[in-house]
Length: 113
Length: 115
View 1 (spheres, helix red, strand yellow):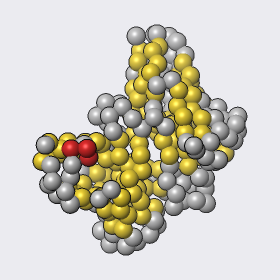
View 2 (view 1 turned 90 degrees about the vertical axis):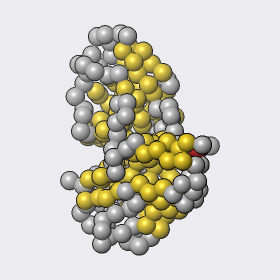
View 3 (view 1 turned 30 degrees about the horizontal axis):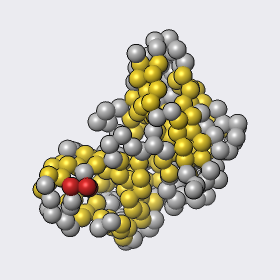
């Protein structure tokens, strides 16, 4: 079945550092791709998405580009803030069968002032 | 405001008890999902439903049961057969099949603790 692999965490950075969280996927066809963010004790919120190859999703300074050649959807931000500390999940939506969401294992990000 | 609501936020269960977690959405979504999240872990799919009166097991359905009698509601029962139920439970909904480019919306979660 389809699967998503994220870089292992936790990731700790200083404020204003550049962030990359790697995400690769294995899927049938070209599924839509998503990044979700989870703050402590809360549910998941959609951060950004891309629905076809070469699309770039962006929101709140975060960006990710759908790369079908490398089956990747890496999350980047040029200058992180303390408030970006959270757990980030990469996900895809299956294009066959039940079209379920498939999640990566999550990456915990901590930003120090 | 449209959204998805889980209740209660915190729930305590005694050994051998069944408990039911509520999930309601007013987004007119066909598909609904239940996930379990353990500390420091990712999400694991328990059950999902693509349409009213139909649901399928996910990856870890043992010890859980669901119903989907109304489009808006997808309650999860954690039965006494679930040997390690302490976890954070997340409910989600999305547009159904045929809307594969759309995202899922999540509730705020229910933290279940066995006492």
